[in-house]
Length: 384
Ligand SMILES: [Fe+2]
Image 1: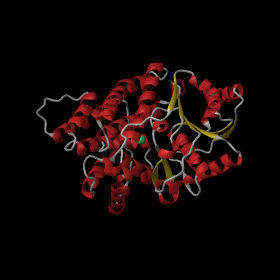
Image 2 (image 1 turned 90 degrees about the vertical axis):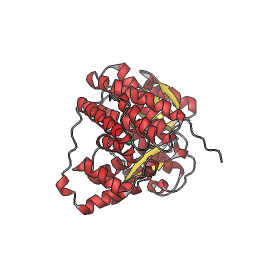
Image 3 (image 1 turned 120 degrees about the vertical axis):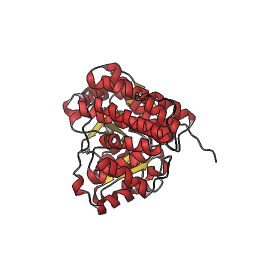
Image 4 (image 1 turned 135 degrees about the vertical axis):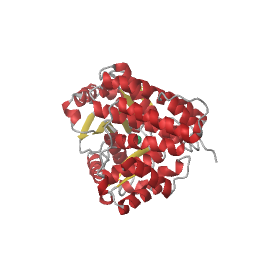
């Protein structure tokens, strides 16, 4: 069997102001009626007006669906899919952050596949065409990734649906759309991008081609995230972060994430810690945990973050230096310390968190074996 290691199937339209071409893009692709998934803020910040104007110029009709929530719950996806089918829309556009794009991905799955969207975390699906992703944050990379995160609120779990059959056909990357992101959102989405790139770089699915790209994207985040935070309207910094985020999503598609994202998914579902923050809180412990398996890569990550190595360090020391450099980086960017009431985490809850991390699908791609004892050690260091 051929095992392809490097794929990019999404057609990308990029550049400042390119959102005004969305109508023309749909027309050329043969679509006539778009189901637009976004959150309500896009009504007030002028983005939907730009899209409507572009649609009108190309005679595209549309239905707007704004019932989007963070960690998209399956029931809202199913509600959206029913409306999309009832309105006979022939394409689905996700515009916004990861939640909007993942909601759109879920709706598009159900245009072509029966049942609940949660079923497709485990079972194959029919090919789903007509998906267009327009990010307004620079973090998730969902526009170029094969994954969608959907939550099952009944059971407090976030489920990754790896939907190779439901990749976006097009992504529209307009850096102007990211300029209104407030400081904290810019920070947390940017740190999510960092996690995508360092986890893909060190995952057991990484390969020499993804490594080259991940190194450059890590360098890009370290250089441009501080600029985007200090100068929110710096178009160059916003553009570089948008590309790093999208390419980070592409790296997830090709090399995947690992235990950093497993922990973040569990902390998000069980303790409601925002995804990018959870990734940032677990990165130092993960760098230390994997340094024995991939010391050269952890050293490279440390160097990109400004750590200095003499060459005499053992793998554990390499991990400690990289972790410290990351902590200094996020401190400079004013990331709040984790806010969890650790007195509310008893042994039963801790054991439940450990099991959830060990069984999370990405954990098996970590370059070290994710066993209970190591997981408990990592969680204690993060939470207590
Ligand atoms: Fe992420």
